[in-house]
Length: 450
Ligand code: HEM
Image (cartoon, rainbow, N blue to C red; front, side, top):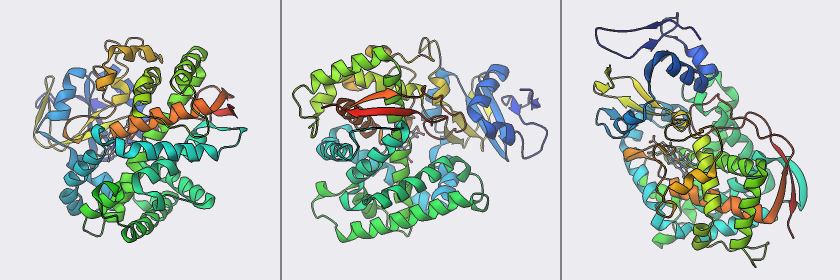
């Protein structure tokens, strides 16, 4: 790890890792394993440093004390940081995005706020029960794939409406195939022209057509009552330009891409430690005692009692958080003793922030008990936990995400007994965008509990 870098004393900019190639910078080394690169750069160049990659200046801040500036400073901007990636990945023009983004964020936040979750609760529980009924009584499969097959249709139906989710087996498989390609290539899609990403571009087109069709269906079945409207109906009410299905695609991506890998990790971490699995099962069986295994009605109070499962979920989120979140610097910004120039993309890595041993002792270890020190009832997270971002544009789906993951994990463990056939894979360090994907397969054997 020896890359050419410069110190610009005159302006007191942070050290800049620029490599030998003008413009291209260290794009190759950085792109190969960006999370690894960031941590090595921090160890070598200090807490604030700039990476020059493919014409972009990415300035990373790594000290907890600077995070508040990242989230709240008027000198940084969320929309300007994401408008190019949004244009590349969902073909939404800048003008449309600048006009609609704030309002989109606001209505998703309003629909998915904690006090409104009861609207989704019973239906989501039914959806999970119905999907779990389709699972064989006994078998072996990849755990990540099991989670996707059960959760994609359930969550889409719950958020977008019953007629809108992939229905028959072939459509479900098609959707899953294209969504996986789209999600896997999302980060490259934000930067490279589609010409270089043929398969990814095909899947994006398939998904956009799929969204156009479900919007057409939803238009025919518009309910009159406000509380019967799905997130998709609200999207259609709010977006009046030609990009409505493009926004729909982004909304679907945001709602599946982070929460579903975290559900996999939560199950994986629980199953990989016998004492954790035992404690989790004791809690689940005591809360669901006497409930029929085929159709369990989970209540909000049940989720409130499943505190150990909640701790396991939060600990999984901590360990597998998004690689980086970003803001564009719009005015010179002081961080530590440096000035970050306008135009830089300011980067914060939740993944590495959650490995700060001062805030999270023994940071690499899965320790659900550390969450007992947070006020779980009030959903106050531990200090330094930034998995959902922060400030004005913090993740608007976070309360829904916590509800769906906790509900799914509890129901699945209550209905099926699992044995890991592979060791739990490491996270792949290839992505900065979104929560971490497993590096390899993780097969499990499952058997229905009578
Ligand atoms: C564990 C699961 C999840 C994690 C870790 C997560 C994390 C994040 C993060 C870090 C951001 C960017 C925030 C920032 O830059 O400050 C974000 C944005 C967003 N998330 Fe989530 N998210 C999760 C689940 C969900 C779910 C389930 C939904 C929807 C149902 C959702 C909807 C969104 C949307 C729409 C945005 C974009 C907001 C905007 O453009 O203003 N997320 N999420």
